[in-house]
Image (spheres, rainbow, N blue to C red):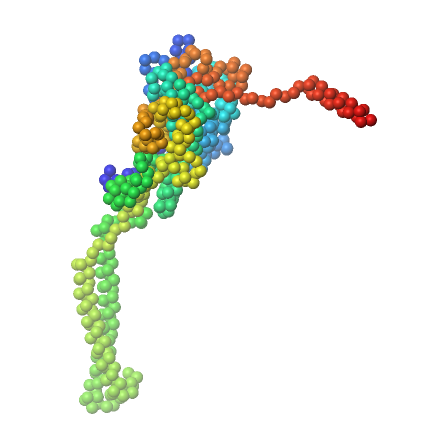
Length: 568
């Protein structure tokens, strides 16, 4: 755009239509339903067998809920996802079932699932007769999985479910089928960033690391930077607009310090700064006149004021002239020798002598002459002001409502590499990556760095791949090789991978948790597969039985009695 000026789109999400009933079955097997349950966005769709499994997920919406106005008084119920429209007016009411990236609120999660089933055309009144593939967090707590399994089996009555990690689904979607490869996955999302080592196709859960920084913290940091820079626009600098700047105008610097030095150059700043245009109204100034109309009105007001002053001077001059004529007439009586009339006139004028009369005549003559000169000068000045008046400068309201986003374009996304920028005592991606590699032998390190995979919505910044290559070049030995790959679609590849996995394992009972197994082994039970977490069952301490307790107490009392006899 001209002069790097970009308007805010302030996009409103359109309500999702209620789709017709989806595919019911493929042969004797029902069609699986794939849910990518992310902390930022939920993606839902069908895994349809066949040559064309279908387009991108049928449903994508923000994972937030808000109570409708008047909900407690019998009005509209809670609103979910895209039904909210613009989030900013409801920001203080928004609630999410997630704590970081782990779902912990069962009621809000049920609202998200109800919304998904309803808009996909699935009737959830009786039961949902479809297998479900659901993504979960890395090293998901057993309580969270137990809560989710209880909700799916008890509330919706699903036949079976399979859990998997979103970043692993994305990883295998970008690799050849059935490949048992090793690598390092760097998954950065809305709430946190994970570094996951993969050894021969399976997750090494013991060496996984999480950084509690993601897109949400970057948006909050950018909001604080711009609010400090533009205190006059605090209300207009919203989180939704900061997310828009992050998604469309930010980038990762290959060398952060060197890039900051470039921004100190005025020419570089002028060519690369993005001017974000805030919405404004010209009616705020209270006038809709053009500059020519304002200039004409100003000239009319100036002319009217000068004419009023000239009229007052003429009236005063007329009065002074009449008084001067009267005094000159009295002086003529003195010169003609009419002394009686002269003395009467002096008494009427409240004067005592001819010398006082002469002094008044001189002062009044001087005042009349000066008044005539002022009137002539005012007429000349009026003509000069009308001809030579210049237009007054016009206040540029549009420029006042512009946010100059310069170094903020690289400072906000940099926090995942340098958490200390926002005061977080955590290691960045590069330090975490080095820490994980140091836990393996040299030959395993060489294998892992040959397949560094970037996925997640927070890795879509331009320059992310180049920055990771630079970091690996600095930490790896001299002349060693490595390979960095960015997911083909960092946002949707997790859903695509889960869909492909569901189609490949549609009739494989070794990876699905059935209702019978849920009832026997509990909600935290997990069947492992190449894209899943590692199942660690709950180990409770064994409690001693009552009979053994009684025997132990009887032995203790007998020993106590024997000791007492010996003492006696």
